[in-house]
Image (cartoon, rainbow, N blue to C red):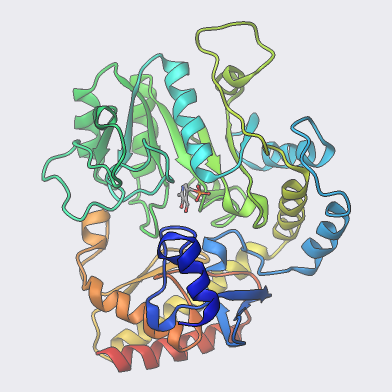
Length: 422
Ligand SMILES: Cc1ncc(COP(=O)(O)O)c(C=O)c1O
C-alpha cells in the first residue's frame, strides 16, 4: 500500500469515501480524469467505465463544462437564496422531464428519493411505500430496505434493512415486491388497501429491463388505488434518453427523482412532478397540515447548477442518444461473442450506455435471478478488468467520450480477463 492510501486508511474507516472499494491488489487513488480516462497518482491510465458512478456521462473535464466552470468559480459561493444559474437549470429540468411541472432541489439522489416519498405521503395522507427487492434508491432509511439482501425473506412483502442503525419501526412502513412481477405487486397492493402512498421504482431496475407491460401495469394499479407512482431516475435520467426512462418506456409517473448527470459531477439533485403535488413543498404557502419540508444549505448552488447546465447542453444535441446506444451495443455484442467463444455462462444486462455483466445463463428478470450467478467469479472478473486498465465496479457506466477504439480495448481486456479466471 502506498503512502497516500495509508493516509486514507488512517483518516477514514477502510480508507473509503463510500461503501464501494476496489480489491486491495488493484486499489488506487485517482489523480485526475480527462475525457474517457482516469489516471492514478502513480500515473497508470484507466479507461473509465465508472464515471463517478454515473454523473460524468459526457466524460471528465469536458471542454465546455470546464469553460463554464472557470467563470462560475471566479466567485465560488453559496447563497441559500435564488440565483440565476439555479433558476436556469430548474427551467431546463421542467422543460425536459416529461412528468415535471415543477422541481425542487436536493443535494444527493438520496435526498431526492426521501423528498419524493415524503411528498407522496403528504399528498395521499397515507404512510406506506412499496419498493422492489434489489432496487437501489439511495442511502436514506426508507430506501435501505431489501436493496441487496444476502438472505432475502422467503415471503414478500417483508422488508429486510440493509444497514444497522435503521429504526425497526420503519420495516413496517416499506413493503417489498419482486421486480417485474405485476401479479405479486397487485396482491400486495390489495392487502395494503388504503395504506399505500406510493410505489417507487427504478423503471429499469439496476440493469434489468422492465418486462413489456410491467410499468404500464404499475401505472394502472396506482391509478386504480389512489397511489402515486414515483420513478427513481437518478441513474436513468438523461441517460436512457433525453426524457429518461419516462420517454424510453412511455410511462409517466407522478413524481420522479434526479441526481448524478444533472449536476455534471457536482452535488445536486431534484425531485420533479405534477404541480398539485409539488405545491406541498411551497415555503410561501400558509400553514397547511400537508406542507412538506424539502431543502438543504447548498440547494441550487450556482457552481453545481453551472456544471449541470453545461452538461445538459452537450447532451441535448442531435445524435447524442444514438451514439450512447451505439457505445452500449458495441460492448454488449462484443461481450456476448467473448462469452460464447470461451464457453462461459455470461451475459450482459442493460441498455443504452448502462450495462452489467452477470455470470449466469439464467434469464435475469429480478433481484434473485440477478444474484443467481457466481458472485465470487464476478468479483474476480471485475478485479481482472481493473488490473487490465478498465475501471469498472461490475456495472459499466459508459460515457459519450468513449471512442470505438476505447470500447474495443475494453473488450480485449475483457477477453483476457475471462481467459485468466476461467
Ligand atoms: C437509482 C438510484 N437512486 C438514488 C441513488 C442515490 O444517489 P446519491 O448517491 O447521490 O445519494 C442512487 C445512487 O447510486 C441510485 O443509483
